[in-house]
Length: 279
Image (cartoon, rainbow, N blue to C red):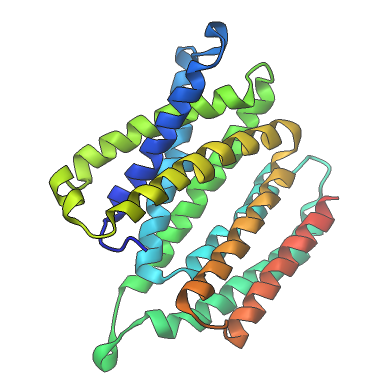
């Protein structure tokens, strides 16, 4: 939708808005609950890179290189990884095997169905090496957010005295500062940004992403992380994957192919099996 803008610009704009909204929200908090101590600040800086700027930038470049479907499915395995790595002590690994097999089969089928389309470069069918690079970036994005989800949940469990809104605002300010540095180092200058078409849409998407997809979503996620186990909380990411696939097909203006439908079905069945095993 904003193809005239670079991925660094899009990422930075969204998270700068996140930082501004967080700063404004923090100003409304009582003074004694407003700022983290030095140790908390270091934790916030590390987690903001894993779960926000770093993750989103990796995913954005993965989508550019490999399309939307396969990165969406790879990101969609986050619930499984969080279940495996953050599962309660009493949950046997064998109980998770059916869900893992179904999910792996779904991802394999989606990669197979997408590879011929993304691996060819239109005119003449010349091979394009970017699809594999996109897969690698998607895997790195998945690992980055999985680490964030596990570490973030563990920290919140150890510090129930920290309010979820305060934690979100700290993360937002750290993310916004990091995004500003990213834009200054690798983003476009203001003159170049103003010269691009669809500037209004770019600003609108940055506001929507920074306020809704970043600030509000992180508040809700922090509350869930304090109240649920990391393995169960991670299942919530399934909705992101399903909506990403739906958006992809709507944007392309087509119905999914049979193999894509089958892959998505296997993926959903795998997640449901994992939830059942958790219960």
